[in-house]
Length: 126
Image 1 (spheres, rainbow, N blue to C red):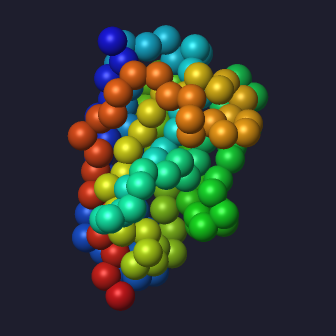
Image 2 (image 1 turned 180 degrees about the vertical axis):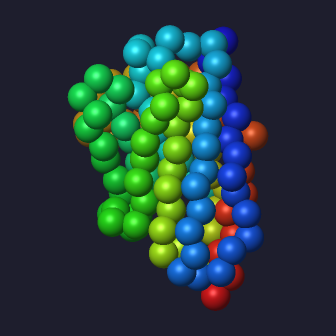
Protein backbone atom coordinates (compact mmCIF):
# COMPACT_ATOMS: atom_id res chain seq x y z
CA UNK A 1 0.00 0.00 0.00
CA UNK A 2 1.40 3.34 -1.07
CA UNK A 3 1.70 5.84 1.75
CA UNK A 4 3.22 9.27 1.97
CA UNK A 5 3.86 11.85 4.65
CA UNK A 6 4.39 15.50 3.88
CA UNK A 7 6.18 17.99 6.13
CA UNK A 8 7.79 21.41 6.15
CA UNK A 9 4.78 23.67 5.91
CA UNK A 10 4.71 26.84 7.96
CA UNK A 11 3.39 30.38 8.30
CA UNK A 12 5.72 32.73 6.44
CA UNK A 13 5.74 36.20 4.96
CA UNK A 14 5.56 37.07 1.29
CA UNK A 15 8.99 36.74 -0.31
CA UNK A 16 10.15 34.05 2.10
CA UNK A 17 11.22 30.52 1.19
CA UNK A 18 10.21 27.08 2.40
CA UNK A 19 11.24 23.53 1.58
CA UNK A 20 8.60 20.83 1.76
CA UNK A 21 9.45 17.16 2.10
CA UNK A 22 7.47 14.06 1.24
CA UNK A 23 8.56 10.54 2.18
CA UNK A 24 6.99 7.57 0.45
CA UNK A 25 6.61 4.03 1.70
CA UNK A 26 5.15 0.92 0.19
CA UNK A 27 6.45 1.57 -3.33
CA UNK A 28 9.50 0.89 -5.42
CA UNK A 29 11.09 4.25 -6.08
CA UNK A 30 11.69 3.44 -9.75
CA UNK A 31 8.10 2.51 -10.59
CA UNK A 32 6.53 5.97 -10.37
CA UNK A 33 7.07 9.58 -11.12
CA UNK A 34 6.44 11.97 -8.23
CA UNK A 35 4.11 14.92 -8.03
CA UNK A 36 3.24 17.83 -5.79
CA UNK A 37 -0.30 19.12 -5.50
CA UNK A 38 -1.96 21.88 -3.53
CA UNK A 39 -5.46 22.81 -2.47
CA UNK A 40 -6.35 26.34 -1.49
CA UNK A 41 -9.47 27.07 0.58
CA UNK A 42 -12.57 26.83 -1.57
CA UNK A 43 -10.66 25.55 -4.59
CA UNK A 44 -10.01 22.19 -6.17
CA UNK A 45 -6.76 20.36 -5.65
CA UNK A 46 -4.31 21.09 -8.46
CA UNK A 47 -1.10 19.52 -9.65
CA UNK A 48 1.78 21.98 -9.53
CA UNK A 49 4.92 19.96 -10.24
CA UNK A 50 6.00 16.54 -11.44
CA UNK A 51 9.37 14.78 -11.51
CA UNK A 52 10.01 11.87 -13.85
CA UNK A 53 12.08 9.26 -12.04
CA UNK A 54 14.21 7.94 -14.90
CA UNK A 55 14.71 10.99 -17.11
CA UNK A 56 14.70 13.58 -14.38
CA UNK A 57 12.28 15.60 -16.49
CA UNK A 58 10.43 18.20 -14.42
CA UNK A 59 7.15 19.93 -15.11
CA UNK A 60 5.75 22.98 -13.36
CA UNK A 61 2.45 24.76 -13.37
CA UNK A 62 2.83 28.21 -14.85
CA UNK A 63 2.00 29.93 -11.55
CA UNK A 64 4.99 28.38 -9.78
CA UNK A 65 7.53 27.99 -12.59
CA UNK A 66 10.74 29.85 -11.83
CA UNK A 67 9.97 29.99 -8.10
CA UNK A 68 9.49 26.33 -7.12
CA UNK A 69 11.92 23.45 -7.67
CA UNK A 70 11.12 19.76 -7.29
CA UNK A 71 13.89 17.32 -6.43
CA UNK A 72 14.36 13.83 -4.99
CA UNK A 73 16.58 11.72 -2.78
CA UNK A 74 16.30 8.16 -4.03
CA UNK A 75 18.03 6.67 -1.01
CA UNK A 76 15.42 8.18 1.27
CA UNK A 77 12.49 7.67 -1.14
CA UNK A 78 11.79 11.31 -0.52
CA UNK A 79 10.95 14.25 -2.73
CA UNK A 80 11.27 17.93 -1.97
CA UNK A 81 9.66 21.14 -3.11
CA UNK A 82 11.84 24.19 -2.70
CA UNK A 83 9.56 27.22 -2.75
CA UNK A 84 11.13 30.65 -3.17
CA UNK A 85 9.59 34.11 -3.35
CA UNK A 86 6.38 32.87 -1.81
CA UNK A 87 3.21 34.82 -2.49
CA UNK A 88 -0.08 35.00 -0.56
CA UNK A 89 -1.73 33.08 -3.41
CA UNK A 90 0.56 30.14 -2.63
CA UNK A 91 -1.37 29.63 0.62
CA UNK A 92 -2.74 26.10 0.50
CA UNK A 93 -2.49 22.58 1.86
CA UNK A 94 0.29 20.84 -0.05
CA UNK A 95 0.25 17.14 -0.91
CA UNK A 96 2.50 14.71 -2.72
CA UNK A 97 1.60 11.68 -4.79
CA UNK A 98 3.00 8.82 -6.79
CA UNK A 99 2.32 9.37 -10.50
CA UNK A 100 1.81 6.55 -12.99
CA UNK A 101 2.44 8.82 -16.01
CA UNK A 102 6.15 8.11 -15.74
CA UNK A 103 7.33 10.88 -18.04
CA UNK A 104 5.14 13.55 -16.43
CA UNK A 105 3.73 14.50 -19.82
CA UNK A 106 0.18 15.59 -20.56
CA UNK A 107 -2.35 15.51 -17.76
CA UNK A 108 -0.02 13.79 -15.32
CA UNK A 109 -2.11 15.02 -12.38
CA UNK A 110 -4.91 12.66 -13.43
CA UNK A 111 -2.63 9.63 -13.13
CA UNK A 112 -2.09 9.04 -9.44
CA UNK A 113 -1.47 5.81 -7.58
CA UNK A 114 -2.69 5.35 -4.05
CA UNK A 115 -4.48 7.82 -1.80
CA UNK A 116 -3.49 11.12 -0.24
CA UNK A 117 -1.28 11.82 2.70
CA UNK A 118 -2.22 14.23 5.50
CA UNK A 119 -0.69 17.19 3.66
CA UNK A 120 1.26 20.09 5.07
CA UNK A 121 -0.13 23.61 5.43
CA UNK A 122 1.64 26.57 3.87
CA UNK A 123 0.33 30.00 4.78
CA UNK A 124 1.86 33.11 3.25
CA UNK A 125 1.00 36.45 4.78
CA UNK A 126 1.24 39.69 2.83
